[in-house]
Length: 238
Image 1 (cartoon, one colour):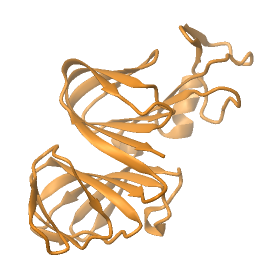
Image 2 (cartoon, one colour; image 1 turned 45 degrees about the horizontal axis):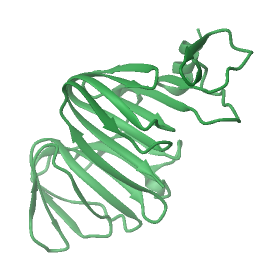
Image 3 (spheres, one colour; image 1 turned 180 degrees about the vertical axis):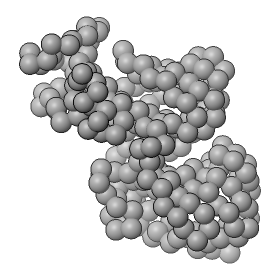
Image 4 (tube, helix red, strand yellow; image 1 turned 90 degrees about the vertical axis):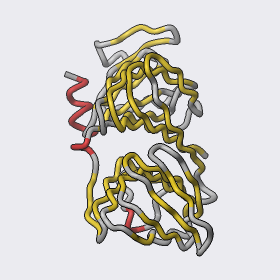
């Protein structure tokens, strides 16, 4: 019942692990470091760090049309921030580009990391040399650049508020079991582009199908994934 309430409150599956049990809750799972508790989203312990694991599906994403295709927002911080206001800390999105050529929206206050999930993308910044990105190859650049692109594709895009937030994106292709290093205590999002994978964070497990994500807040030092998939791991930290 508590897990169902958590999903309804957050739009996704939420799992939390606290070091101290709350006596008001009857459902308590032991683990090596203390107690694991499945709790509704409004609950928050004041003492001790904890991890939040949220399962995001396409139904939880926000999609908007643009002149050259559609952009799907996977996650944004702080929660409730609006991309158009240009005051967010970070944003993760995936856009379909249906034009042969297009220009990137100027974002002078942000650094950007981009890749493609499907199709090739050719980029040029401020009239410089052209760079070709194949699927799951990663490129970072300044949002202040005058950036032009060629090629129809589906991209994967991280925006980071310069001076306030840093981050990185890495591609992973597990065939079996793989351990991924995380920035402990920070935020990460694991996106499954193809295939399926089961992830383990602490004592919690979660299975992702294609186009689903796991948002990990107050992340542990590592994450274990098992399956056969093409993954993008985005990490955001101070």
